[in-house]
Image (cartoon, rainbow, N blue to C red; front, side, top):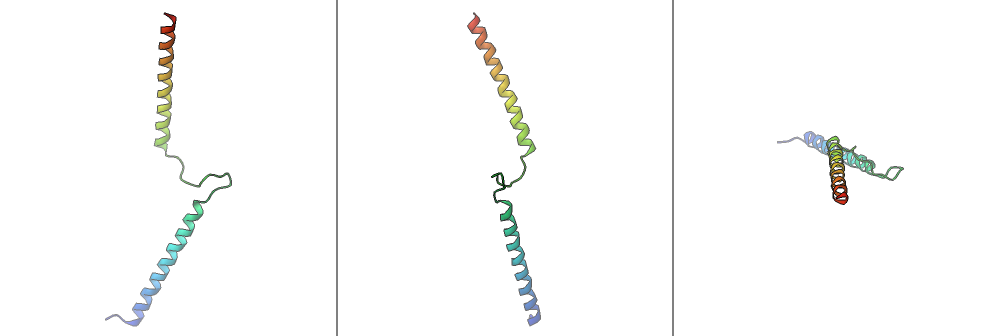
Length: 77
């Protein structure tokens, strides 16, 4: 059998836990608000994503150069 004191302590623990949860939600909502410059506060860009974008940018430039040389070679002949 559970005593009255144990029941009251458990209820207090649940209230404290739910209060912390509400504080955490309020804190997270503050992060997602718009900054002064109008951008949304979020994580910095992923390094892997940035390196992949650089790779494909270089690849695209190489393809464009090859196409330009092929066009100039066919136009010259």
